[in-house]
Length: 383
View (cartoon, one colour):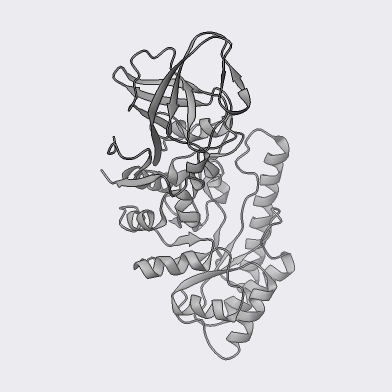
């Protein structure tokens, strides 16, 4: 438990992070791993996560980030691991930063290729270990079409010293039950495999490629190519609605906690909180917890959203009562006579999967992690 001065805190278990990284390797032992640490490592702290992963027994081929600012932050911190810039560069100045700081850009649009092509008329891409060419296989977000992929990959591959990796991204691989989603995944895999074959034929050599993120790693072996890009699973969350993180063997990395700061005796028929969205059907012992949407706890969390109370009697589950406020939530302590002011309340993490909480809030655990605010005290452990 943290010092009493902290009203809300997040304990980040870097040892669990490393175990989740090792699990990636057990699923795909022949592939190289590129952990995705964008968005402040999914809200867990990019600096601490990057150093932990860099020192892990399971080796990382690179780290992947979403913005040049994130990449430069890692370099400023002294991270020496290669960095893949998923968004690529926007102009020549950003490309030069990539070249000067050993940042590997993703080319997903023709305007980016035109910048590189003009540069390659006179120089070589010294300093960049790889260039990643993103092809659109059906997600229709970022990625080159079929003809442009063949041109860009082929032109970059022909220049001496260029290492090129073909990549794409699965749109619906996390949905294992919906037929449309399953069919889309099959279609994307077929399109990617066809592109790899075309490029292998046109370049007369093997094609390095990357397709699988967390859901692909765990459930779609056909997407296990030379490079993997695990994201959410590293932080202990399941990408699947129908399979729990525990069943997969993942360990929670973030445990978000707060404190009981008041306990009220509420009579039958009385309401709780703003809007009177919960009315007590019987006498209720109501606990007030020092966390709210100002700390990143979802305002959309419904009545009954689970929390875990650690009292003198041990850990017990109970549920949310009423609407989430900016600074507090109310929970039902009627069945917990030993719970008292000062007890720890776990909002998600150890003993309470974030995926489960997210379902009550009509969101995903990715968003829960990323929305934890600076009011929450972050502490790291690696034991």
